[in-house]
Amino acid sequence: MTSSPLELGPLVRYVGAHDASFWFEFDAPGTVRVSTDIGVAGEAKTWGIHGHHYALVALTGLPQNTALDYKVTFDGVNVWPIHPETASIHTVDPDGPVTLAFGSCRRGDNYSDQSLQRIGADALAGLGNRMATQDSSRWPQALLLLGDQVYADDPSPEILDRLRARRGAGHGPDSVRGTDAEDEICDFEEYSWLYHESWGAEPVRKLLASVPSCMILDDHDLRDDWNSSASWRANIETRSWWKDRVVGAFTSYWVYQHLGNLSPAELVEDELYAAVRSAASDTERERVLASFSLRIDAEPSTGRWSFYRDFGDTRLIMIDSRCARNLDPNNRAMVDARQWAWVRERALEASPKRLLFGSSLPYLMLPALHHLEQWNEAVAQGSWGRAAARVGEKLRIDLDLEHWAAFGNSFADMATLTRELARGEDAPASILWLSGDVHCSYVARAEFGVGGDVPATYQLTMSPFRNPLELPIRAVNRLAIKRPMARAMAALARSANVAPTETSWKTEAGPWFDNGVMLLTTDGDSAALRVEHAFVNAAGVQTLTTTCEIRLT
Image (cartoon, rainbow, N blue to C red; front, top):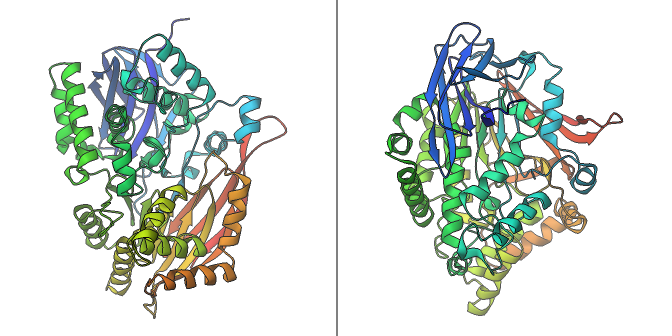
């Protein structure tokens, strides 16, 4: 049997009411063509870097709210779907309900009995298996992958074996040999292994070939606690391997994740994409992307990973809350001034019925943890003196105190924007924050002191897809929602001169710790949430069970 030249994909990355984009990786250069059962087709030539060959194909002029079968050929030979199966997408209904599946933190380890015992069932596998039995009209309109799609600093046992074999054979970057990162992913080739492992296994491959996906990066794309503080940056930049890691991480993120976040129209206007496609050689493309990677790491304001998508009257603003930080201890910000201005403009310009902020890190943490992070930031900035500030900075890194609450300026900016939206003439029916990262899932309802007939404001946190939290930390999270603990941590924050805020919130459901996924459905002025958790059934199939259903009002 001849092997297929299609190494990874197709990934359906963007589907609107009238257009769509498909992402591919092949084992050789060539021309890929996507054609639909209604005669609409598009094609593109591959472009190569580091021995890999990629293509994005855009389709336009599609009918809205329609199920479309598609097929893929490469140099005239059919490569997808694999006979006798069919492949299909469903275009957006601008006036209909919108369902978005979301979560974060997914290890790409295989589905062996040992792996299933160690880290549990995969929520995306469960979602894919469910969709295989459903009509396309019941599929989510998009899958939101809210960070940690890959774990560069903690690869699976299988990839760890490959890494050691590669290092032993003298391949890969010399900078990592004999260092604390020798068993971690470093260059583009090694990053590609992570994506193949994570997205290549069934039924996840078929899921990604049917449902459009939106992706944002988080710390494990580079290393745990990435950009938690200026002292973390100063330390990591002394490592011999850091620049190689940055180039490998950002080049692969741009190729495998970011490009597909852009609409077909945005792709046409993207200068970096044009430069890569028009480069005279693969070596020139590699140089262009390496230069971009080092620049955006050093000066995040020179680029933007944040993006937005509209699903009818629902707008999603996906915020880069990791790379775009200002780490100046005297002026910390989760999002630098340039990118925050972009977020405000996208939020205020469209008057959507529903406004969703996607952020890998929760805006509203469990209450006690929120106050702990406020206290820590104040102490690290000197409220208890210089000696305590040094301890506070160390605790910030050691305890992962780096969420929105630990960037007080940005927490206040988001609250101000929310009040501004809520008081506007065309206030949205709901303002929701969709997040992951914390390996703990919960639903929290917020009040911003606006009064009157205000939007429904909720923090919706789903993590992990597949990477369960250690038992001791689960106990800490259970304590963090208790009122006595929250009051104690609030008093601690006040002792460090943290000013009170008009924003308040209460955990209405959760916390949960099992692997799972949330599905948010917006319809008219209403929004509903379904919480699903993954398990392996008696037949040995990974599937989902509904844990909770909530109407967000």
